[in-house]
Image 1: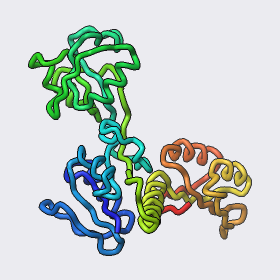
Image 2 (image 1 turned 180 degrees about the vertical axis):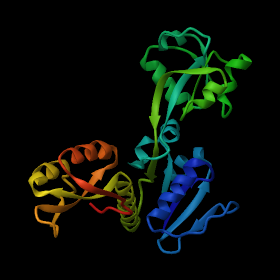
Image 3 (image 1 turned 60 degrees about the vertical axis):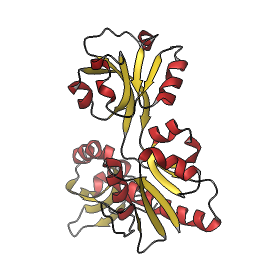
Length: 283
């Protein structure tokens, strides 16, 4: 059995549990239990504080973990990462009071900076030749300038609304982060096989989320152009229609290219374009 540690609450926890369920793994999750066992896959899930997860995995208490890269790198264990998961994306940024002058990171020379990420920030500042006084605090970092603790902060930013609400403006991106799957280095061969099965399922789910299934009708005269626009996994499926001179085309397109490709398809004569979500996609 594999023991997987995830954050016990919050958005990262919700997204992690959703991914596990989308992988076809069933389990009972309640707000008061700190561990649960899957019913159809050899997996036990531990619900822990995010800051504790890298250490638990490094020490082998948990075999796997899902955690933010920011937490993993701050803890000093980036070598545990086995795969990025594409959700819970954010950035670690420097911010200063809106009224303060700011030209570049060198403006922070000798200043006081409040942060929960002194290791990442320290390396960033050292790389720019800046020496500052770092005040490590575990929460409510945004309040530090208004109470006179620091002239700047470095904290996790998603939308930036929290910074604005506290009279701050983002000035530098220090580190970009997303959820990652991590694993302890001493898995048994059986555990390694289970990890590969789990990764296979996760990759199929993620690949499907990035893709759309598209069906359309097109005149045969435009087929080569349609095929050029819709390469599919290998090539599109083409089926003759009852109406002479027309074919039905089925293919897969990437989510971020969909609208651009659709407008091009219409321009070459495609009609009746139907787009469907993909639940799983095995490459």
